[in-house]
Length: 181
Image (cartoon, rainbow, N blue to C red):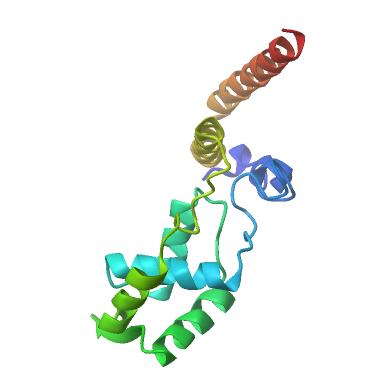
């Protein structure tokens, strides 16, 4: 990265990029940690381990990915829940290539079959698909813009700023048309 093209933290870390609330009280790009009930973490872990063995980090990442970034459980919620599930003999720890993995036991599979009758906890059924697509597009735009700020030449960065300014104007036009019609 060239020093003359880096402008500090991309976009200042404001509300849109994880620095505050947006769209229903949570950070727009998953910068904060979504909160769920303790049972939701438990169910999420069981469902994911029912697919394949995973380590704690893989479980946290899968939940974040499956929720579109709206829910990112912390190690402080994942690891105690894994320990509890292990104490209840619903999962067991194994080791593969020096990595501790967790997998469902037969009792864990029976428990899931008997108790799981709803959507996975990372699915927000109240969120319209169009909003999910908008969130995804904005996250991808953010990634591209950050990459440009780190690797782009001054002329490329200036061109990108023009593109973003035009996109902002067009979004406000869409909103104005919706309000007027």
